[in-house]
Structures are given as structure tokens and as C-alpha cells.
Image 1 (cartoon, chains in turn orange, yellow):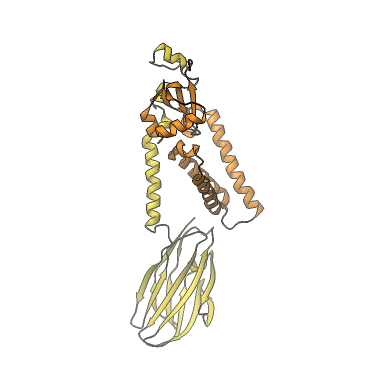
Image 2: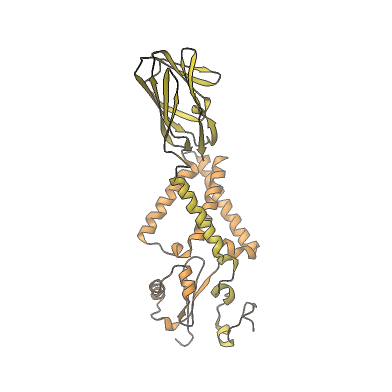
Length: 148
Length: 189
């Protein structure tokens, strides 16, 4: 029973945490982020199963997280009104070549970050961008101007 | 004028025609959606910060505290944490300072000390261990006047041991109770 309860608490905590820290942190996977990911996984495992090395414990822990993930995605699909809260929404960060400062600031994205993301998609100048949209995953999608 | 998503837009026709599918400027550029609720986001972050501050303030353990009970014949000093978390290893140190000679010092530990807690080590070993109404009795033997006797017990909290438990400690000389320490531990999951 404990593992299922702990699994639920950790899942909800991590979900809320990922939503509030912002998508900028989600999109980057720098070397330090990788280390953090491993440390986070270790901390979560210890809180989840503690000294339980049993197969039953592992099945309960993994099963709980899988079922909760399924419940979240089902809720997301079934109730569109909750989608913006559960999953977030895309944010327009550039319109017609002009960066929208308020939205960039909200997601703590600098113009340098924006330029780096553009370069990854083969775009050299903001003038070529009609729309840039920061997706819920943290990735920035660029739509070029039709004449560029 | 309406965008491709059918929601109202006040953009010029040329701009509205180029808006990517499923993007609504009022929601996704002007951030009017509930998903962009800043106060809620800040409230959660403040709550999280508060939990961390409480952690620093030892609310969730395991920094030890000293509790002292005094009597004419002896003092008992207990140095142990009273806020714990599942799985933690910790030490409890019991120090008896005899103002008068104790012929037969006995410590009585309430059931909360042993309930769902591993007792890993006890040093020095008591002369005898027994049970009295669910409490653990540790016979320590004589303690001369002016001397002090220190007993160390190392514990580990079982992960399922969550809640509050009484961990009172009573000091006897033979069958005479000399003093008592009223104490409760809180175990966090």
C-alpha cells in the first residue's frame, strides 16, 4: 500500500513541479541537466521504494506511475478545458520578425537562446521568421515568412 | 473577423490569415488562458520554498535536541532527534548524572522507542533487558555519586513507521522512580 501511495505523491509532486518551473528547463539537456536527471532519478527511487528490493515492489511502483500517466493523458484528451492546466499551452514568442519580450521574459528565454534555436532550424535572421512558437515541450517552432 | 480556429481575433486580415493552425493570439500571444495563471504558479513556488525553509528549520528532522530532567538524586539528559523520517539512522544518548549514589539504575523506555524502529547497537550493553507493560527496561547497574553514565543507542526508523509516538524515558533506582522525560517523536514519510 505504501509504495502505491508514495508513487502517487511523487508523481503529483513531479508533475506540478515540472509545470511550475517552466518549459525552458524542460527543453534543454545540457551536460549539467543530464547529471541533474540522474540525481533526481536516484532521489525519487529512494523515496519511492526505499529499502524494498522486491519484484512486487518494483511492479507496484512502475504500475502506479504508468496508470497515473495514463490517467493524465486520458484527462487531457477527454477534457479539453483542463488541457491548458495539465499540459500548458504553446506561447507565441515572435510575430512577424519581432520578438515578444513579455512572453520571452515569462519563459526566461533570452534573445541569444532564441537565436540559437533559430540556427538549429537553419534560420539566420529574425527577419525571416513570421512566427516562433514555444511548444509545451519547451521546443521553439519557427515558421518562416512566405517570401523568405 | 475570426481566425482559423473560429475564435475572435482583432488582427488585420493579412496577419490573421497567416496565424498557424490552433494558435489563438488572444490565448497564446496575449496569454489570457488559465494555463498561464501566474499567481497560481507563484503560489506553488512559494509553497515549495516554504517547505524547504521548514526543512532548514529542522521541522522534518533530524537535528538532535537535548532534554534534561532533574531530581535531587540524579539528572537525566537525553540527546536525540524528535523529528524523524522513514529510513533514517540516528543516535539517542542517555546521560545519567548521579548527585547521590544509585545502587541499581534502570531506564524505562516507552514502546515508541522500539515500535517499528530497528535498534542497531546499544553500548554499553545493559546488565539486563526486560519488558514492563510494553515498555523496555534496561538495567544499567550502579552509578556512583558525582559520576555520570552514558548509554548510546543507535536506531533506524522503519519506512512504514509514520506518525507520532510517545518516547518517554523514566529513570529508576531499583523500584523507585526518580524522574521522567515526557517526549514524543514525529516520523515523516
